[in-house]
Length: 262
Image (cartoon, rainbow, N blue to C red; front, top):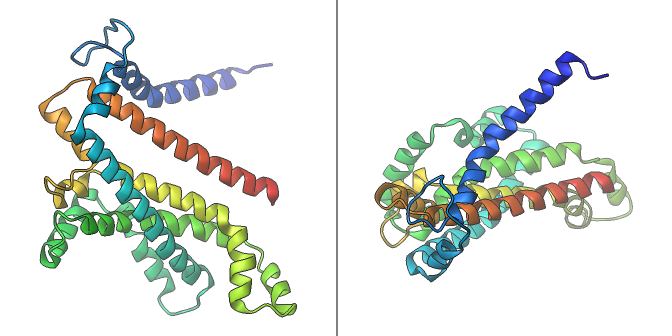
């Protein structure tokens, strides 16, 4: 028998989910509207704004740049974050908790404050308006996510497996490469995917340190909203939603397989 509180609970859940999904659904619908302006009055189904996007050099270049930067950031943040996670979980040193908290600061620091700091530092290093600058800045943002996710995998890891490998004559490097890393690999891959998303979606810092030659996709969307509001923005946003949805689904499948195998 369904109780009154159960009904309230399900209604609240559906309301919250609807509130979250409504903007995404509206954006997707608008991307197929042939009207030359953003309007909720749907006048038909058309792919013209996707065709406009594909034929626009500026939009395609911004997309390719964002993908390239996000890919580099994913690799760099995963390498650094995994190393830091091992140090935090396995290491024993003075000030461990303080250092761990410092690595997680980008998660709680206001993006504008972080962007101002990055701008001031990069201006002295002559990194403003460079791809290298964007990669370094985005890596700082993605690093905490990698550290948290890999640390979670390490905390769940059974160290008895390493001890068993060592008792059979395996070196520390062999144990790391053939036992530890393969077992925590789903966590590392998931962390890399989230690092990609963090970079691919980042706008605030990019606005501070980019120039006309390093315009990312979020910047291009922002500029389009400010100066030329047309449905091509909805089409690009829909493609961005699709990419992120695929990445999140992949991360979910990876972690689910890990639990099943465990």
